Image 1 (cartoon, rainbow, N blue to C red):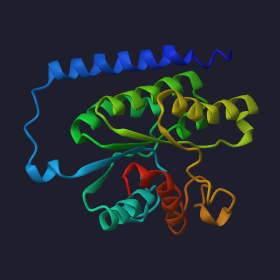
Image 2: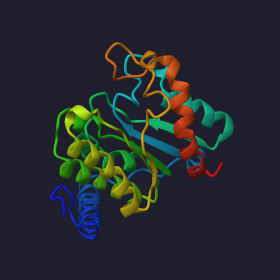
Image 3: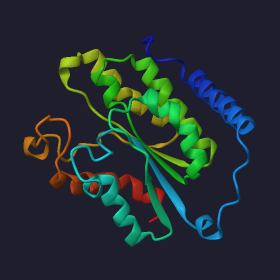
Image 4: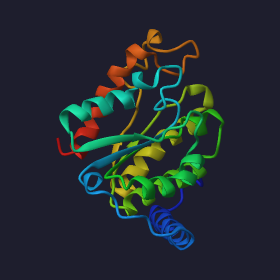
Length: 225
């Protein structure tokens, strides 16, 4: 077995244990939250934890696919709202460090996890990426949220073993935790150079509608639309 991958059962148990310990520590360190307002209790939240691809890098905030998704949800599912907690440059380690506080703050019904690209661009170990994403999924499920795991693909210059392992990480975690998977966020625009900014990494504003529609195919069923 590739050493980059722990035994699935062990990884799942480890992630659950880590989540329970962290939730317990936070509960002891912080006062109990005030009871939410009645209006807020009737609104369900989609929490997006992503990197620059979800943070509308190089665009106005309202031009990104997350904002466009929020606008669609406002029309088609008025009982829902979208919270975009994405940060440009975020790695899975950063997302893992923030996830418990974010799910406790927003109590989401759905969590979209779109992270990993920056790990690969920095050549970070796949084992750590896998553990970080497992923590995020575990924390989301701990508060009762459904999870949409959004994958990425990397250029071949990183080497076949790394790029194939990178893609497999998302598939394995989706199967292990029984969550929905969108294998490749940029699938509808990846082959169109005109769809990207000068850095050839971040899609332009005109490409965001296509990305929103691509994500929507997997997200909408989680909203029971």
